Length: 56
Image 1 (cartoon, rainbow, N blue to C red):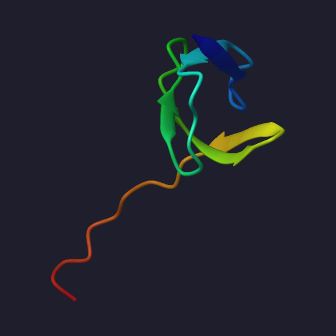
Image 2 (cartoon, rainbow, N blue to C red; image 1 turned 180 degrees about the vertical axis):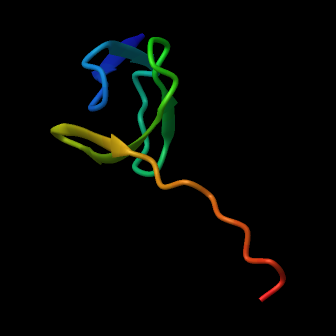
């Protein structure tokens, strides 16, 4: 098991060793979802919120 540093609160969010770009990692402290942007080096950012398209 590995961890990433939460960009929102700075806590360590546990994640699998086999990270994949686009994977979502939840922060156990503040609850935000982090999206893996890069694997080498590991880079994460806040995941975009899913919005409804209202059938458009």
